Amino acid sequence: MNAKLSFYLLLFLATTCFDGIINVRWLSAMQNYTLFASAVLFPLSGILFFSIPMFYLKKIGSITRENTFKLVSHKDLAIIAFFDSSSAILQSIATPYLPIVGMSIYNRLTLIGIPIVSFFYLSKRYLPSHYLGIFLTLYGILISFMPQFLNHEQLGNGWAGLYILGVIPAIFSFVYKEKKLKQSPEIWWFNTWVCIYQLLIGTLMLPFNILLTKTSSFSGFGKQIGDGFVCQFVGKNMQDGDNCKYALIWFLLFNVLVTFLNVLMFIIIREGSSVLFVITNTVKTPITSFLGSFKVLAGKNTSKLTIADLFAFIMLIAGSLVYSWNDEINPSKINFDEFIEIKDDENDNNISLMIQNQ
Image (cartoon, rainbow, N blue to C red; front, side, top):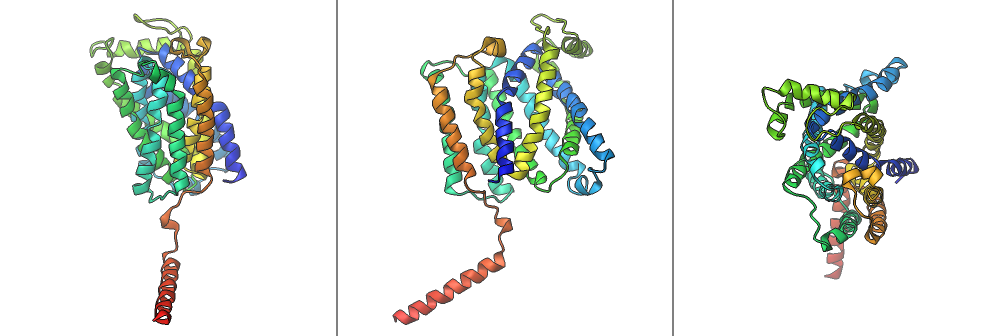
């Protein structure tokens, strides 16, 4: 691993431990409008935050057709947006009803899914150190949540199935992003267009809000959207169970942070891999547990910090270091002509040895 990638990983780790806490607080404040928040508000803010730097870079000549649409098509961007939107919508609906502990465990299922999909779709091959790194990471997660297991605490309910279902498109999104980011498109441009397609897809999916929330109906769909805007930007409770007072603050904090983290994520995937990103992202789990132990940060999702979090942190660091020790293998980069010549030479040497022995 080069020094530049190591710096990006450390910078990402230092900031990402806050995004889970802030995301939960934002979606809890918007608990009656979670689909609206993830399908419309999130991509809309993404377009704003990413397009401003994009237009500036385009103005100074850093963004051209050579590093944009010649590398990645509208179809590619729409596919990524569809995977991201599907994952975000499914998980955001379930988030207010699940503890942070449960969601952290469910998200780690990507560590199993990404290598499997990459094996077939990207033709990647992994060394024993990679499998050991994944195992240590998963083991560290289990250690982190061992007290909850021993105390028979509930990690979820019926909403857990919906949240886990949202992990599947996230897996495909990571792998497809890696394939396209390896072609080195301009990251701010890439993010802006993904957000545009996310907004279009999310808007089309809005009617599902009627079927997935008790407070919605087809006749009151327009009012539901209007109430969501008022809750988000005015902070006024519009329905029973609303908690809109600080919704705008959490919204702004989350979007500023996630913009920065998204850029780092794309750089890490481009310079490293999607699995390396997910493993690094997993290291934040004990740190998030520590932050989640403060009610002022986690709110009703507060959970106690245990000694297991310390052991888990050490194990997760070890897993990350072990995995990144060797680069992943992509057979498509192997010169098969040279490989065949080497094999032929080995066969000739073996034949010569056999004749000498006889």
